[in-house]
Length: 436
Image (tube, rainbow, N blue to C red):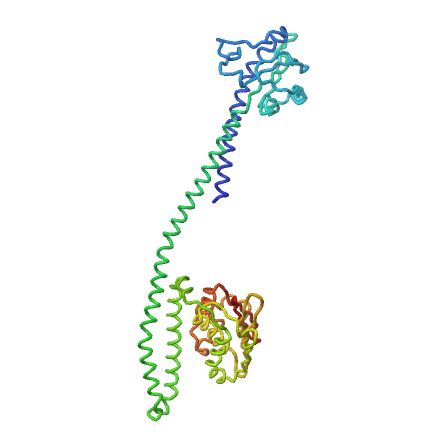
C-alpha cells in the first residue's frame, strides 16, 4: 500500500514539474523569438538597449508581448563571435555564452530548427535559460532561395524560484495527503477486518460455549454408566463368561470418554480464563514434592508395562528450591507429559525423570525410550487432536489433548515445553520455570 502510494505521489509530482517547466520553456521561446528581431538594430547601434526600454511604464520589455516581466526574465544579445552587445533584466547570468554546440548545430544544415532549439536549453544557478542563433537571410546573384548568415545569438532566462516554491508546496501537500491517506486506509482496513472477524469470533465463542456445555452435560450420564459398569464388574459371578471381555471393553471405552470430556471441559474453561484469574491461584511450592506425588500415583501404570523409571528429583540442593505458579495446573502439565511417556514407551522400556537447576531456572526433563516422533512432525505435537500415527489412537487410550493442555499451561506460566525426538530412539520433553 505504501509503495503504491509513493509511486502515485512521485508520478503526480513529476507530471506537475514537467508541466511547469514546459510552461517556462514556451515563455522563453516566445521571448527569444521577440528579442531576435532587435539584434540587427543592436549590431548597428550597440548602445540602443543599454537601458531597458519600457512601454506604458508598466515594467514590461519593449516587445510585442506585454506579459514578459523584467523582475523574472532577462534578455542578452551577442554578436556572431559571442561578444555581449546588450542586456536587459535584473538577474543576469554570470556565465559566458557557450556557443560551441550552437555553432556546430548551425554548420550542420541537415538539422531541423527544433533539434537546434532543444540542444540549448540549460539550467544554472536556479535560472532556466535558452540560447538561440539569429540568422540574416539575403539574396545573392538573384538566387531563388535566400542565403542564411549567422549574425549573433540571443540568450533569454527566467528565474525558477517560483516554480521551486510551488513544487516544494506541492511536495508537502502530497506528503501530508499521503500520510492522511495511509492513516484513513489503515483505519478503514482495521474496521473492515474487525467487521469480518466479528462473525468468526462469535462462532468461535459459540463453539467454545457449546463444547463446555456439552462436556458438562456428558459428565452425569457417563458417571452413571461408569458406576453401573463398576457395580456389575464387582460381581463377576453374575456375568456370563462370554460377556466378561465385552464388559471390560465397555469399561475401557467409558474411561476414555471420561478423560476426553474432562479434557474438553478443561480446555474450554482454560481458554475463557483471564490471566489475572490465573495469577490469583499462584503460590510458591516445591517441585520435588510434586514430582514425588506424581510418581507414586503413576506407579501402577509403570509396573503394568514393566517400565524402568529412573528419577533424579531429590538432590539436597533442590529440596528447598521453590517455583512460583499454580500447583494444580503444573501438576496436570507434568502428569500429561509422564502419561504420554508411559503410553508410547514399549514394555520393559525406560523413562528418566530429572530435576535440574542452573542460576536462573529449574528444568524438569522427561526422557523415554519409546517409538519416537519424526522430525517433520515435531512442530505439530502440541496441536489439538493431532497424532503422528492415527493407528495409535485407540491403542494409547488418550484423548489427543494431553500435550495441547500441557503446552497451554506452560504458556500461561510464561514458558514453553521443548521437545526433541528420533524415530526408534525415544523422545525428550522439558520445561523450565524460574525458581525462588
